[in-house]
Every structure is written in structure tokens, then in C-alpha cells.
Image (cartoon, rainbow over all chains, first blue to last red; front, side, top):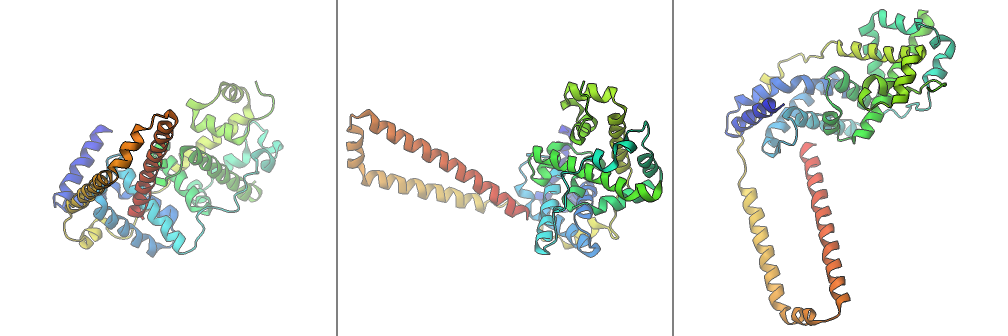
Length: 198
Length: 148
């Protein structure tokens, strides 16, 4: 952690000192996270590409304002997230799923008869059949915020604190969103694939 | 041990936030195959998300951004001068006001009534709180503007 911060500080000092090529290293170190966030938040391919460039141009012009309160990648992640949110707001696209069925309970949907078995055939079947494709389709169906936080937590393995800084959501709200997103993802997998697959 | 099944949030907490999970939940899942099964499926879901393919752009992002970068940036000292100048002007105005209302202020201090001092102290305290709050919300808004 300290080593990373030292590395960040070094790179920023170089960029602020006029060495633009150090900025290339910053891009290469952080683009994985930036692209993940943009892909989860934005559907249109061309807009994704434009936004990725816009993010780094913002990072470049605001680099002198970085206060070292977080990792550089987290700060860049938050710029990415806010840029995407602004884009969605401008285009009047939904940010959060308004049909989020919070009242759903897994036991009610699946039925105790199915889940009550020692092994749950529908779930094991789903996870054995073209797993990643099916999962990708179902993740895509989630709202942009849910997709993003699920990816940041499970794929990028960021901590609650880091995701909280990126999304500017309080940790409690973030945990709640994560619970709902995972539940919705699991329920969608079960509801959409159990009938025809079993 | 709970006799009814755990709700989804409890199962997820056991699966992904074990450190903060209550003993009752742990005890229940250890002895309930149904809830354990749901927990294992969440674990599997998490593993599957982890191995999903990384998204890629069709071009080299670093090269493209480097082409579009404006002139090399340097820290802007002019901003600090503006701030210092504002502070100096502010202090100057304050000193002038104190000088202008000198006699009134002296009269105020000479008042022996303790409740007057209390009201003044309270006023200063509340103003201080308001000022801190204003500065905080200003900084927060400025940060949001900078990021968007």
C-alpha cells in the first residue's frame, strides 16, 4: 500500500514537473479499472471510447488537485464514475433500476421444494452451462450502478472503502446495494434459466 | 439456533462479510443444508464473476490520450496569491471596522451583566459552526465540480 502510494507520488511529481510521458504510465496502470467502470455504466461502444479519453484528459488537467487522500487509481475511478453518471444524466438514461423488486425473497421465488433439496439442480445446472456467457447476459441486465459495484467488488476485488470513495456512496448504502444487486442477479439466473433448462 | 431459514441478506453477510457476521447466523448456516446451499451458490457466483473476461477497447487508449494532451501542466501559484490577497483584504476590513466601532465595543465590554457575555459567546460559537459547515460544503461542491 505504502509502496503504491510512493509510486503514485513519484509519477504525479514527474507529470507536474512537465514530464508528460509519466502520464502514460499512469494510464497504463489504471486503465483496467477505468474501462471496467465505463463498460458497466455505458452501453454505447462509441461513447465508451470517447468517455475513456475524456476521463484521462480530466485526470491530466486536475492532477495538481489530487490530495493523496486515497490511492491514485481510486481517485481516477471516482472521476470515471462521475463522468459516466453525468453522461447518463445528460442522455436521460436510467441510473438505477426502478423495477428493483426488493420484496422478493429467494425462498418465495424458487419455492422451498426446489431449494430444499440437498443439491439445488437448477442452480448447479446454470453454473455448469455456458456459465460466463449466461452470467454476462444477466449482469448486463442489471442497472448501471449495480453492474458497476458488483464488478468492482467481485472482479476488481476492491474494498468497501475504495468502492465507497469511487461511487461517493456511504458504506452502509453501498453494502445494501451490493446485497440487492447479488440477490437480483441470482434470482434472474434462477427465474430465467430454471424452467427451460430443467 | 434459528428454526426458520435465514433471509438473503444474512446469507450474503455470512458469505461475503463473515467478520461482521453474528454467531446466530454462523450457527444456523453450519447446521442448515438449505441455507448453506444458497451461501455456496453465492460463492460460486462470486467466483464466476471473478473469471469473467476483461473488457477491452479497440484502440490503444494511452497512445490516443497522449496525442490529445494539452501543454505540460504545472502547479498554479497564482491561485495562492489570490487567496492570500483575499485574506489580507479581509483582515484589513476587520481592523478598520474594529477601529470605527471602537467606542461601542469598549462600552460593550464594560457591561457587567454576565448574560450579555453568555449571549455574545453563544453567537460567536454558532457563527463559528456555521462558518465551518459553509467551508465544508463549499469544498465538497468544488470537488464534485472538478470531477464532473
